Every structure is written in structure tokens, then in C-alpha cells.
Image (tube, rainbow, N blue to C red; front, top):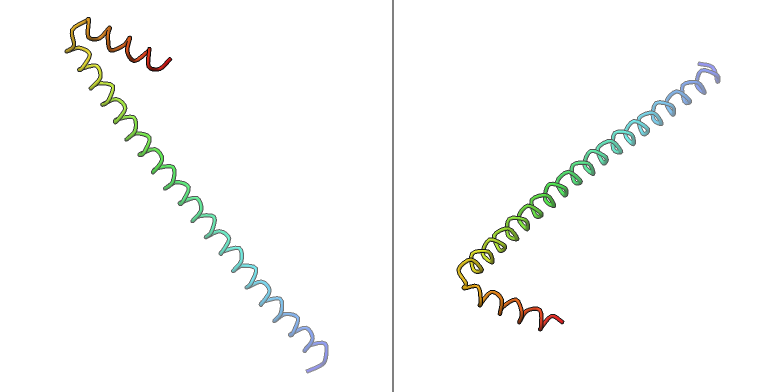
Length: 89
């Protein structure tokens, strides 16, 4: 073997090693991006569920208030509104 062949072989081995590291890095980056996208999707889904739950609760509370007002005589409703607005001012 000549010096040029040995040098060429060493360079080729280093090139293969560098390529392997490069591919590993690319693959690792791709996996991290997929995991981050999945986490964002899960976070968005959880936020959507929480918002829907709050919406249901607010609708239920509004319905309860409506039921209470519907069962109160008109004078009681007026008095309750006047008291609320006086306290808020």
C-alpha cells in the first residue's frame, strides 16, 4: 500500500463517520420537531376542552339565573336589580 492509498482510506473513513454523525443529527432534529408538534397539538386540544367546559358552565349558570328570574314576581326582580346597581356604584 502506498501513502496515497492509506491517506485516501483514512479520509474516506473520516467522511463516513462524519456522514453518520450528520444523519444522526438530522434524524434527532426531526424526532424533536415531531415531538414538539405533538405536544402543541395536545396542548391545543386540552385548551379547547377547557374552554368548552367553561362555556358549558357559564351557559348553565345563565340558565339558572334565568330560571330564578322567571320564578320571581316582577317587583322582586326590580328591587333586586336596583339593589345590585346601587351596591355596584
